[in-house]
Amino acid sequence: MTTRRPFIGGNWKMNTERASASSLVRGVIDGLVGLQGVDVAVFPPFPYLLTVGSILRERGSAVRLGAQDAYFEPDGAFTGEVSLAMLRDCGVSVVLTGHSERRHILGEGETIVHLKTKAVLDAGLECILCVGEKLDEREEGRTDSVNEEQVRLGLRDVPAEQVDRLTIAYEPVWAIGTGRTASPADAQDAQMKIRRVLTDLYGKDHASRIRIMYGGSVKASNARELFAQPDVDGGLIGGASLKASDFVAIVRAAVAGA
Ligand code: 13P
Image (cartoon, helix red, strand yellow):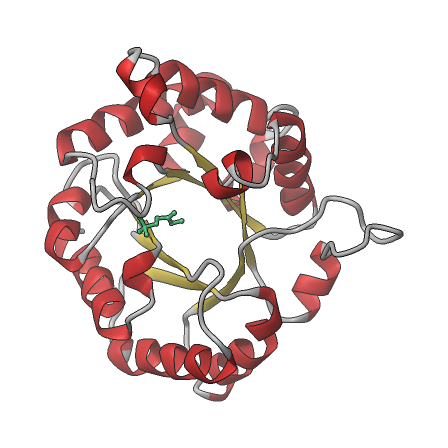
């Protein structure tokens, strides 16, 4: 960790129900009372955004409301899709793009990821662009080239003025939901190289301010060591974000490692 303020996101994916989403966010709020020096966001499923958002507002919490996805068109005949204006209307301030489950399960290609990333930033919201290699790509020694390509294509035509609202999440696909975490050294190496790409695109000043999160089987027991790496500016947490006490422990590890 460096002078960049750590950022921890809880990506609830397609989990929770209305009651459990409410108690989960209440547990997160309670567990983080008084904690400073870290940005935290939760990403509930779309149907619970308003419920979770209103609990955050009622409690005056600094935890931010995030969306797991968004469509890039402003409105129209796009059955099943959700626009950025709708999300903003629900209190969302940060949106994930390029999550590996959308790339590899839902079949989103680079063009869609790019259009979504651009739309989020053009809408004035914060974007977390997720990148990361699959196991076969890692085994073929292509980790850095895959990350570089996903960063460059995702950020095509994104101007430097917008990248202060950008975070990158490095999530090696083989580490997501598998219990297999990248070693702190491997995460640092990949993320340092991602920062080099950002430096090439936007210059050193901008690149040194962009936060790069690590995601993939982060737990309370491994978080501190990961977040202690100089280019690991926090984490995007899946499974361990579904239990308030685990998620809170991970956020606390980010503050301790800062
Ligand atoms: P897990 O923490 O469950 O591995 O998920 C990581 C992730 O995909 C967060 O977006």
